[in-house]
Image (cartoon, rainbow, N blue to C red; front, side, top):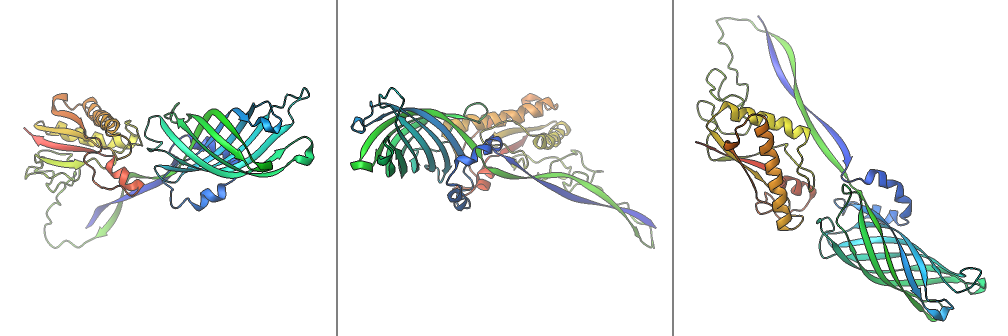
Length: 379
Protein backbone atom coordinates (compact mmCIF):
# COMPACT_ATOMS: atom_id res chain seq x y z
CA UNK A 1 0.00 0.00 0.00
CA UNK A 2 1.20 3.52 -0.70
CA UNK A 3 0.93 5.73 2.39
CA UNK A 4 1.83 9.47 2.39
CA UNK A 5 4.19 10.47 5.18
CA UNK A 6 4.51 14.15 6.20
CA UNK A 7 7.76 15.58 7.43
CA UNK A 8 8.07 19.13 8.83
CA UNK A 9 11.18 21.00 7.88
CA UNK A 10 12.02 24.11 9.94
CA UNK A 11 13.63 27.01 8.15
CA UNK A 12 15.17 30.25 9.30
CA UNK A 13 16.34 33.36 7.61
CA UNK A 14 19.07 35.68 8.87
CA UNK A 15 18.81 39.39 8.38
CA UNK A 16 20.82 42.38 9.49
CA UNK A 17 19.74 45.89 10.43
CA UNK A 18 21.20 48.97 12.09
CA UNK A 19 20.15 49.29 15.75
CA UNK A 20 19.87 53.08 15.48
CA UNK A 21 19.64 55.57 12.61
CA UNK A 22 23.37 55.12 11.97
CA UNK A 23 23.08 53.75 8.43
CA UNK A 24 22.53 57.19 6.92
CA UNK A 25 25.01 58.77 9.35
CA UNK A 26 27.79 56.54 8.02
CA UNK A 27 28.30 59.13 5.31
CA UNK A 28 30.07 61.20 7.99
CA UNK A 29 32.78 58.56 8.51
CA UNK A 30 35.44 60.60 6.65
CA UNK A 31 35.59 62.75 9.77
CA UNK A 32 37.21 59.79 11.54
CA UNK A 33 40.94 60.21 10.97
CA UNK A 34 41.47 57.43 13.50
CA UNK A 35 39.17 54.85 11.95
CA UNK A 36 42.00 52.29 11.92
CA UNK A 37 42.15 52.53 15.71
CA UNK A 38 38.40 51.95 16.09
CA UNK A 39 38.64 48.87 13.84
CA UNK A 40 41.37 47.42 16.03
CA UNK A 41 39.07 47.76 19.05
CA UNK A 42 35.98 46.37 17.30
CA UNK A 43 36.19 42.81 18.62
CA UNK A 44 36.53 43.96 22.21
CA UNK A 45 33.70 46.51 22.23
CA UNK A 46 31.40 45.48 19.39
CA UNK A 47 28.36 45.78 21.62
CA UNK A 48 28.71 49.58 21.90
CA UNK A 49 27.78 52.21 19.26
CA UNK A 50 30.07 54.63 17.46
CA UNK A 51 29.07 58.25 17.02
CA UNK A 52 30.06 61.50 15.33
CA UNK A 53 29.74 65.06 16.67
CA UNK A 54 29.88 68.54 15.19
CA UNK A 55 30.40 71.33 17.75
CA UNK A 56 31.49 74.93 17.56
CA UNK A 57 31.65 78.04 19.65
CA UNK A 58 33.60 80.82 21.32
CA UNK A 59 37.30 80.75 22.33
CA UNK A 60 39.49 83.15 24.33
CA UNK A 61 43.17 82.93 23.22
CA UNK A 62 46.07 84.58 25.02
CA UNK A 63 46.46 88.30 24.20
CA UNK A 64 50.25 87.80 24.39
CA UNK A 65 50.00 86.42 20.87
CA UNK A 66 48.72 89.74 19.57
CA UNK A 67 45.05 88.73 19.56
CA UNK A 68 42.08 90.63 20.94
CA UNK A 69 41.35 87.69 23.27
CA UNK A 70 38.47 86.35 21.22
CA UNK A 71 37.89 83.89 18.39
CA UNK A 72 35.84 80.95 17.13
CA UNK A 73 36.46 77.19 17.05
CA UNK A 74 34.84 74.37 15.05
CA UNK A 75 35.36 70.64 15.79
CA UNK A 76 34.40 67.46 13.97
CA UNK A 77 34.54 64.43 16.28
CA UNK A 78 34.46 60.67 15.75
CA UNK A 79 33.95 58.64 18.93
CA UNK A 80 33.56 55.10 20.18
CA UNK A 81 32.38 53.73 23.53
CA UNK A 82 35.05 51.46 25.00
CA UNK A 83 33.08 50.51 28.14
CA UNK A 84 29.94 51.72 29.93
CA UNK A 85 31.95 54.64 31.34
CA UNK A 86 34.81 55.31 28.89
CA UNK A 87 34.83 56.70 25.35
CA UNK A 88 37.65 57.51 22.93
CA UNK A 89 37.34 60.41 20.48
CA UNK A 90 39.29 61.76 17.52
CA UNK A 91 38.79 65.55 17.44
CA UNK A 92 39.60 67.44 14.21
CA UNK A 93 39.55 71.17 15.02
CA UNK A 94 40.14 74.56 13.47
CA UNK A 95 40.27 77.97 15.21
CA UNK A 96 40.40 81.56 14.06
CA UNK A 97 41.67 84.18 16.54
CA UNK A 98 40.80 87.84 16.10
CA UNK A 99 43.77 90.24 15.96
CA UNK A 100 42.02 93.56 15.41
CA UNK A 101 43.57 93.83 12.00
CA UNK A 102 41.23 95.77 9.74
CA UNK A 103 42.18 93.48 6.85
CA UNK A 104 40.96 90.37 8.67
CA UNK A 105 42.35 87.78 11.07
CA UNK A 106 45.95 86.65 10.70
CA UNK A 107 46.15 83.89 13.35
CA UNK A 108 44.80 80.40 12.57
CA UNK A 109 45.20 77.10 14.41
CA UNK A 110 44.40 73.74 12.80
CA UNK A 111 44.95 70.45 14.61
CA UNK A 112 43.74 67.13 15.96
CA UNK A 113 43.63 65.53 19.40
CA UNK A 114 42.83 62.11 20.80
CA UNK A 115 40.56 62.45 23.85
CA UNK A 116 39.44 59.99 26.55
CA UNK A 117 36.02 60.71 28.07
CA UNK A 118 34.61 59.47 31.37
CA UNK A 119 30.84 59.31 32.03
CA UNK A 120 29.41 58.35 35.45
CA UNK A 121 26.73 56.21 33.78
CA UNK A 122 26.01 54.66 30.39
CA UNK A 123 25.18 57.32 27.77
CA UNK A 124 22.30 55.02 26.65
CA UNK A 125 20.56 55.38 30.04
CA UNK A 126 17.96 57.81 28.66
CA UNK A 127 18.90 60.82 30.82
CA UNK A 128 21.28 63.78 30.75
CA UNK A 129 24.87 62.47 30.94
CA UNK A 130 27.77 64.62 32.19
CA UNK A 131 31.34 63.80 31.15
CA UNK A 132 34.95 64.78 31.79
CA UNK A 133 37.77 64.54 29.22
CA UNK A 134 41.55 64.60 28.83
CA UNK A 135 43.39 64.70 25.51
CA UNK A 136 46.64 65.29 23.69
CA UNK A 137 47.48 66.00 20.06
CA UNK A 138 49.08 68.46 17.70
CA UNK A 139 48.34 71.65 15.79
CA UNK A 140 49.76 73.94 13.14
CA UNK A 141 49.84 77.61 14.21
CA UNK A 142 49.55 79.86 11.16
CA UNK A 143 50.89 83.37 11.94
CA UNK A 144 51.49 86.44 9.86
CA UNK A 145 54.31 86.83 9.04
CA UNK A 146 54.51 83.21 7.93
CA UNK A 147 58.07 82.88 9.24
CA UNK A 148 56.57 82.49 12.72
CA UNK A 149 54.25 79.63 11.71
CA UNK A 150 54.95 76.07 12.80
CA UNK A 151 53.74 72.85 14.43
CA UNK A 152 53.06 72.46 18.13
CA UNK A 153 51.84 69.97 20.75
CA UNK A 154 48.35 70.47 22.22
CA UNK A 155 47.01 69.26 25.57
CA UNK A 156 43.46 69.75 26.75
CA UNK A 157 41.07 69.03 29.61
CA UNK A 158 37.38 69.72 29.90
CA UNK A 159 33.86 68.77 30.90
CA UNK A 160 30.44 68.76 29.32
CA UNK A 161 26.99 67.24 29.21
CA UNK A 162 24.97 65.17 26.71
CA UNK A 163 21.19 65.28 26.36
CA UNK A 164 19.08 62.09 26.09
CA UNK A 165 18.56 60.75 22.55
CA UNK A 166 16.03 62.83 20.58
CA UNK A 167 14.07 62.57 17.31
CA UNK A 168 13.65 58.78 17.22
CA UNK A 169 17.02 58.03 18.85
CA UNK A 170 18.82 59.75 15.96
CA UNK A 171 20.43 62.76 17.64
CA UNK A 172 21.48 64.22 20.99
CA UNK A 173 22.62 67.73 21.97
CA UNK A 174 26.14 68.31 23.33
CA UNK A 175 27.78 71.11 25.37
CA UNK A 176 31.58 71.26 25.91
CA UNK A 177 33.82 73.53 28.03
CA UNK A 178 37.57 73.00 27.35
CA UNK A 179 40.92 74.37 28.50
CA UNK A 180 43.57 74.00 25.75
CA UNK A 181 47.32 74.58 26.09
CA UNK A 182 49.52 75.15 23.01
CA UNK A 183 53.23 74.54 23.79
CA UNK A 184 54.60 76.68 20.92
CA UNK A 185 56.64 79.84 21.66
CA UNK A 186 56.88 79.21 25.38
CA UNK A 187 53.28 78.06 25.66
CA UNK A 188 49.91 79.82 25.64
CA UNK A 189 46.42 78.76 26.71
CA UNK A 190 42.86 79.31 25.62
CA UNK A 191 39.38 78.54 26.89
CA UNK A 192 36.64 77.21 24.65
CA UNK A 193 32.85 77.02 25.15
CA UNK A 194 31.18 75.00 22.39
CA UNK A 195 27.80 73.45 21.62
CA UNK A 196 26.52 71.19 18.88
CA UNK A 197 25.00 67.81 18.05
CA UNK A 198 26.01 64.16 18.34
CA UNK A 199 24.72 61.43 15.99
CA UNK A 200 24.90 57.74 17.01
CA UNK A 201 26.16 55.57 14.16
CA UNK A 202 24.69 52.42 15.70
CA UNK A 203 25.80 48.81 15.45
CA UNK A 204 24.97 45.93 13.14
CA UNK A 205 22.78 43.34 14.86
CA UNK A 206 22.10 39.91 13.44
CA UNK A 207 18.58 38.56 13.82
CA UNK A 208 17.38 35.06 13.07
CA UNK A 209 13.79 34.92 11.88
CA UNK A 210 12.19 31.51 12.15
CA UNK A 211 9.80 30.81 9.31
CA UNK A 212 6.79 28.49 9.46
CA UNK A 213 7.71 24.90 8.74
CA UNK A 214 6.92 23.50 5.31
CA UNK A 215 5.45 20.06 4.76
CA UNK A 216 7.19 17.65 2.45
CA UNK A 217 5.25 14.61 1.32
CA UNK A 218 6.91 11.43 0.19
CA UNK A 219 5.55 7.99 -0.65
CA UNK A 220 6.55 4.89 1.28
CA UNK A 221 5.66 1.48 -0.12
CA UNK A 222 4.80 -1.00 2.60
CA UNK A 223 3.40 -4.49 2.41
CA UNK A 224 0.31 -4.83 4.65
CA UNK A 225 0.07 -8.17 6.42
CA UNK A 226 -2.78 -7.31 8.82
CA UNK A 227 -5.11 -4.48 9.60
CA UNK A 228 -3.10 -1.42 10.70
CA UNK A 229 -4.44 0.92 13.34
CA UNK A 230 -4.96 4.49 12.33
CA UNK A 231 -2.01 6.63 13.52
CA UNK A 232 -2.50 8.93 16.49
CA UNK A 233 -2.64 12.59 15.57
CA UNK A 234 -1.39 15.16 18.08
CA UNK A 235 -1.73 18.50 16.30
CA UNK A 236 -0.45 20.70 19.13
CA UNK A 237 2.33 18.31 20.26
CA UNK A 238 1.30 18.25 23.94
CA UNK A 239 1.38 14.44 24.21
CA UNK A 240 -2.41 13.95 24.11
CA UNK A 241 -3.85 12.85 20.76
CA UNK A 242 -6.56 14.96 19.15
CA UNK A 243 -9.26 12.35 19.81
CA UNK A 244 -8.84 12.80 23.59
CA UNK A 245 -7.55 16.40 23.71
CA UNK A 246 -10.21 18.57 25.35
CA UNK A 247 -8.00 21.71 25.18
CA UNK A 248 -6.47 21.95 21.67
CA UNK A 249 -3.88 24.45 20.46
CA UNK A 250 -1.67 24.23 23.56
CA UNK A 251 1.62 26.16 23.01
CA UNK A 252 4.78 24.05 23.07
CA UNK A 253 6.48 23.84 26.45
CA UNK A 254 3.35 23.84 28.63
CA UNK A 255 2.59 20.87 30.88
CA UNK A 256 -0.89 19.40 30.42
CA UNK A 257 -3.08 16.83 32.20
CA UNK A 258 -4.53 13.63 30.69
CA UNK A 259 -7.21 15.67 28.91
CA UNK A 260 -4.63 17.96 27.28
CA UNK A 261 -5.52 21.01 29.43
CA UNK A 262 -2.89 23.29 30.92
CA UNK A 263 -1.86 22.42 34.48
CA UNK A 264 -2.00 25.38 36.86
CA UNK A 265 0.97 27.05 38.59
CA UNK A 266 3.58 26.92 35.84
CA UNK A 267 5.58 29.57 34.01
CA UNK A 268 6.72 29.68 30.41
CA UNK A 269 8.84 32.23 28.58
CA UNK A 270 7.18 33.43 25.38
CA UNK A 271 10.00 32.48 23.01
CA UNK A 272 10.12 34.87 20.08
CA UNK A 273 8.23 37.65 21.86
CA UNK A 274 11.26 39.91 22.15
CA UNK A 275 11.72 43.65 22.24
CA UNK A 276 14.33 46.05 20.96
CA UNK A 277 16.42 48.10 23.36
CA UNK A 278 14.16 50.57 25.26
CA UNK A 279 11.05 49.66 23.18
CA UNK A 280 7.67 48.10 23.99
CA UNK A 281 6.16 47.61 20.50
CA UNK A 282 5.28 44.07 19.35
CA UNK A 283 6.92 42.82 16.15
CA UNK A 284 5.05 40.88 13.46
CA UNK A 285 6.78 37.67 14.61
CA UNK A 286 5.71 38.32 18.21
CA UNK A 287 2.07 38.84 17.16
CA UNK A 288 2.06 35.52 15.29
CA UNK A 289 3.20 33.71 18.45
CA UNK A 290 0.59 35.50 20.59
CA UNK A 291 -2.15 34.40 18.16
CA UNK A 292 -1.44 30.79 19.23
CA UNK A 293 -1.43 31.76 22.90
CA UNK A 294 -4.83 33.48 22.50
CA UNK A 295 -6.27 30.27 21.00
CA UNK A 296 -5.16 28.39 24.14
CA UNK A 297 -7.07 30.76 26.44
CA UNK A 298 -10.17 30.64 24.26
CA UNK A 299 -10.08 26.81 24.20
CA UNK A 300 -9.68 26.55 28.00
CA UNK A 301 -12.18 28.92 29.70
CA UNK A 302 -10.90 28.24 33.23
CA UNK A 303 -7.36 29.39 32.44
CA UNK A 304 -6.01 32.60 34.03
CA UNK A 305 -2.49 34.00 33.80
CA UNK A 306 -0.19 36.80 34.83
CA UNK A 307 1.77 38.47 32.01
CA UNK A 308 5.19 39.21 33.57
CA UNK A 309 7.54 41.70 31.86
CA UNK A 310 11.31 41.75 32.45
CA UNK A 311 14.22 43.93 31.22
CA UNK A 312 18.00 43.74 31.07
CA UNK A 313 20.24 45.56 33.58
CA UNK A 314 21.01 48.67 31.50
CA UNK A 315 19.44 51.84 32.95
CA UNK A 316 17.93 52.81 36.28
CA UNK A 317 15.64 50.51 38.29
CA UNK A 318 12.76 52.97 37.98
CA UNK A 319 13.03 53.34 34.21
CA UNK A 320 13.32 49.55 33.73
CA UNK A 321 10.26 48.94 35.94
CA UNK A 322 8.16 51.29 33.79
CA UNK A 323 9.49 49.72 30.58
CA UNK A 324 8.71 46.16 31.78
CA UNK A 325 5.17 47.25 32.71
CA UNK A 326 4.65 48.70 29.23
CA UNK A 327 5.88 45.47 27.61
CA UNK A 328 3.65 43.27 29.77
CA UNK A 329 0.67 45.57 29.05
CA UNK A 330 1.36 45.42 25.29
CA UNK A 331 1.15 41.60 25.38
CA UNK A 332 -2.03 41.64 27.54
CA UNK A 333 -3.74 44.21 25.29
CA UNK A 334 -2.97 42.14 22.18
CA UNK A 335 -4.38 38.93 23.71
CA UNK A 336 -7.55 40.79 24.76
CA UNK A 337 -7.91 42.16 21.22
CA UNK A 338 -7.76 38.53 19.99
CA UNK A 339 -10.72 37.52 22.14
CA UNK A 340 -9.28 36.61 25.55
CA UNK A 341 -11.54 38.04 28.33
CA UNK A 342 -9.76 40.88 30.14
CA UNK A 343 -10.58 39.48 33.60
CA UNK A 344 -8.47 36.38 32.87
CA UNK A 345 -5.23 38.34 32.36
CA UNK A 346 -3.20 40.64 34.59
CA UNK A 347 -0.01 42.48 33.51
CA UNK A 348 2.87 43.17 35.88
CA UNK A 349 6.37 44.53 35.37
CA UNK A 350 9.38 43.32 37.32
CA UNK A 351 12.06 45.53 35.72
CA UNK A 352 15.55 44.08 36.15
CA UNK A 353 14.84 42.38 39.51
CA UNK A 354 14.47 38.81 38.18
CA UNK A 355 17.21 38.20 35.55
CA UNK A 356 17.71 34.78 34.01
CA UNK A 357 21.43 35.50 33.62
CA UNK A 358 23.55 37.54 36.00
CA UNK A 359 25.93 39.17 35.53
CA UNK A 360 25.21 40.03 31.90
CA UNK A 361 28.43 39.41 29.95
CA UNK A 362 27.18 39.95 26.38
CA UNK A 363 24.35 41.26 24.17
CA UNK A 364 22.92 37.71 24.09
CA UNK A 365 22.68 37.69 27.90
CA UNK A 366 20.86 41.03 27.85
CA UNK A 367 18.51 39.87 25.08
CA UNK A 368 17.55 36.74 27.08
CA UNK A 369 16.79 38.87 30.13
CA UNK A 370 14.50 41.16 28.03
CA UNK A 371 11.57 38.74 28.04
CA UNK A 372 7.86 38.24 28.72
CA UNK A 373 6.57 35.27 30.72
CA UNK A 374 3.12 33.77 31.27
CA UNK A 375 2.45 32.50 34.80
CA UNK A 376 -0.60 30.23 34.53
CA UNK A 377 -3.25 29.28 37.03
CA UNK A 378 -6.58 27.51 36.52
CA UNK A 379 -9.68 28.52 38.51
